[in-house]
Image (cartoon, rainbow, N blue to C red; front, top):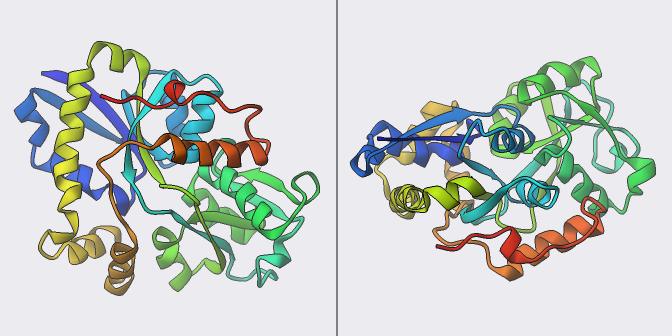
Length: 284
C-alpha cells in the first residue's frame, strides 16, 4: 500500500477529506492517505512541502503561487474550493478600533510571513488605498490560537482569518468583526511536490478522483449542515450561510485565473515577475 501524506487547515472546508478518510475510500486504490492538520496555515504548509513532510497540501491559492515562484518545487494540480474565501477583519473585543479605516498604520497580526493572513493584509491595504510602506506593519502570532490570546493583550491590532471559522469567537469573544476582505480568485487549491508528480502521477490522480466524487455531491449529503455545526461548533444558520456561498471544483485553474493571481501579487510587490503557467500548473 502506497503511503501518502496530505496537509490542510482543520476547518470545515476540508470535511470532505475527513469523510473519505473515515470511510477508508483510498484503501480501495491501495493508498494509505494520512491527513495532517496545519494550524499555522499556508506558510507552514509551504515549508512542509519544501521539507518533504507531506506529498500534497490543500492550500490557499495566492500563498502557494507565490511560494512556487519563490522556488517551492511543487505544482497546483486542481482547484479545491472554487468560490472566494471571505476573510474577516478582526480586532479585540475591547479594542478602540471600530472600522477598517481606523486600522491604517496599525499592526496586522499574521500567522507567519507568506501566510494567507500576511498576503491578504496587502490586498486589504490596497482596497483601502493605503501605502504599503507606511501603513502596513506586522506581528507574527503563529496561528488562530495565537491571535485569540494575543490580540486582547495588544500583540497586533487586527487579524485576518476566514470569517465563518472565527464566527464563534466573534459571537462569544474575544474578537470583534470590523470588516471583510474576499479573495478575488478561487480560494483553495491542491498542490503536489514535483518529485511525487514525476514518480506517482497515477496515485495522485486516484486521490483526486475519490475526493472529487465526494465534493461533487457534498451539499446533498443528508444532514451535512448539522454534521458541520456539531463538528466545528458553529451555529446551524452560519453553516447554512457558508454552504450557500461555497462551491467546490473538480478542475484545475485556467491560465487566465492564474494570470489574475500573479498580476495582483506583482501589483502588491509580493513577486518580482510573473512566470509561465507551465511552471505552476500540472495537468493530467
